[in-house]
Image (cartoon, rainbow, N blue to C red; front, side, top):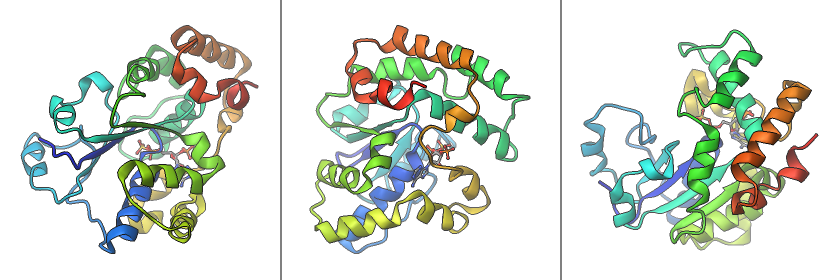
Length: 249
Ligand SMILES: Nc1ncnc2c1ncn2[C@@H]1O[C@H](COP(=O)(O)OS(=O)(=O)O)[C@@H](OP(=O)(O)O)[C@H]1O
């Protein structure tokens, strides 16, 4: 199903990463990369997998799937996999707003109800924590690159440079700075209707680190910290997250 040029990414922040990759391709080749169709691997009709064979190179796909649910061909063809993670607190808040803001998808009666379901893993695409445990085992694998949403927020140009190097794009400092200016939350939100249609402003909602503080109760905060420890204490993912410095009140 895939070629060795395929690149893949997962989890919240995916529209951000897709945009950065598009800009990298444009800077490198001067050709605007057009997605033949919606690039999310798990969304669409079954015939999409046949059509995907014809997608032009480089094929870029996004997915929210767990590592062990990825098609075997991705590994066989040595596709490059860029994995973006975001702290679970802001991820939950972003996901809650996504459900309640976007028309025609199920909404929740309250944040508390959503939080309960999120902690049980009974939300679309399942448990965040199972996803993290699953991916944690593969973050050092060949052809896998981890990137943290919060690090990208803190130093966008440095993150873009790392992504460029991972995919083998050789760009000047000036090109990286230009892409960085076009990839800020403000720049992307300003163009979101043009790039993503009516749903754009919902996908580019706030783009901040720490928005969880506006919704989490103290009890919910403790519950999430406990769950995080229970699932990820001592793992390399925990160290990469910088959980203590970014996400503890
Ligand atoms: N450029 C930039 N900078 C910072 N943050 C950004 C950027 N682009 C998207 N975002 C934020 O990513 C969140 C949406 O994630 P996804 O694109 O993966 O959403 S989805 O899976 O398609 O629903 C959503 O987070 P919240 O604002 O917290 O809801 C977006 O605002």
